[in-house]
Structure formats: C-alpha cells, structure tokens
Amino acid sequence: MWKSPAISYLVGHLTQLGVIRAQVLSSSYSTVSQAQVYNLREGKAVVSSEDQHHNQVNSRIPEKNAGGENRNQIRWNVSRKDKINFLVKTLLNLNDSKEDVYGTLDGWVAWEQDFPIGKLRIALIALEKEQQWHRIIQVIKWMVSKGQGTTMGTYGQLIRALDMDQRPEEAHKFWQKKIGMDLHAVPWQLCKSMISMYYRNNMLENLVKLFEGLEAFDRKPPQKSIVRKVADAYEILGRLEKKERVLEKYNYLFTEDRSRKKPKNALSKEKKKLV
Image (cartoon, rainbow, N blue to C red; front, side, top):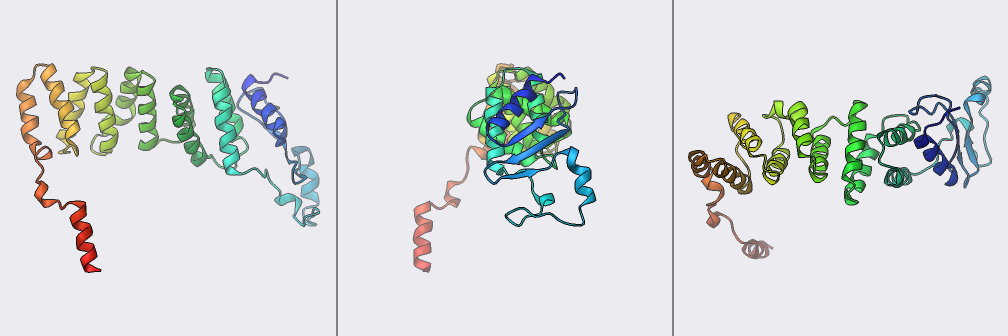
C-alpha cells in the first residue's frame, strides 16, 4: 500500500508522541480514512471504524469506562495549543515540497470535524515569528485551494509574505486577480502595504496607478508617508505637475494644527484637577 512521505511523517510523529495509531487506506496523499485515536496518559481510546457497527448495535446501553465516561463521548484528548504547536514544528521540519506540505496539512485537518481556520491562523502567526515566508505562502495557497481563508486579512498576509520572500511580481499578479478590482472596499492598510512594496521594488507605474485608482473613489490617504512615496514616484517618472498636485492636495497631512492637540502631560493635569 503506497503512502505519501508527508502522511507517513505526520502519522509517525503523532505515534511517537503517544497520540495516535493510524492506518492510511486511501491511495490519495490527502486522505486518512480510518484511524484509532489514543490518549495513553488517560488510558482512553476512540474505537476504530471496524468496531463502529458493534457500537451502533449497543448504543442503547452506554458503556462506561473506569472514569464514568461513555465510550461514545471519548474523543482525541489533545489540547488546542498542542495541536497547533505540533503542526508548526512539523511544517518547519518538512522539505521544500508542495506535495509534502499539502499532504501534511490534509492529514492534519482530517482529524477535525470542521475546517480549523482559527488554529491555522495562529499557526501562520507562529511561522511569521520564525520568518518562514515561503512556508506561509504554501499554507495560505493551500487554504485558498480549499475555499478557506478568502479574507482581506489572509490576502494581506500572503502579500506581505510574497514581498518578504522577494516575489513582488507574483504579489502584483495576485493583487490584480483577487484584490485590485475592488478598490473602494480594500482597507487602507493593505493598500499601504502594496504601495510600499511597489516603492521598494521600483514598480513605480504600478504604484501611481494604484494611488490614482484609490483617488477615483475619493479615498484620501490617511498618512503622509503614503503621499511622500507617491510624490517621489511622480518625480522619478518625470511627472512633476502631478507631484505638485498631490503635495498641495494633501498638504494638511504635513501641516497639522498642533495647537488643537493638547500635550499628554496637560491632559493628565486636567484629569487630576477633576479628581
């Protein structure tokens, strides 16, 4: 019976941890169809699929273990944190193979009743701390292929990972395909990330096109750093009139009336007086 290296790796490490004993019965690397799940520390087990018929026959007479729990209620007794940590460590130790990564993720989610989007997001944050940008890209692309994680937050994380992995052209294509067609609703933080990426990689035509697209929806930049990058791009491209227009239009970001803002120490004094 053929087993994917990724699934064998996953099952092998779970077995070493004393968590499961599993049989991979499908010829597809993405399916774990029958398994026995154990918590050795508690001496509990979820019965295998071979025993399901017997359990159904005797379902009217709940069998209890020494701890008073019904056998049918016993599940994989592993904490959420341990599951996430295990996945992160497994992903960090895998070879740079799409098949291995996808197979591992498929095997991991096979133990969940619902798609564990929350756990995967925590795992992605952990991978970010390790600066595993290439692995983050693989995980998010796998999620999207499953129809999951199709949110601006996940897309932004993918854009950032592609940028850090020095793949700006791929990030640009993804932006055009999934995000850029709906500029009136894209969060400014995500737009700022794209403008910064274009600026760092000298993709200035794309930068000014994005900014002008946002202006077409009457969306005003929230920070002067964005205006500076746009003005610099216009100058490098030789469009000095547009540079001056932008600087003049958003001049208020550079000349904020500081008198309207009271210093923090003044505010604290006022609070003390009220007390």
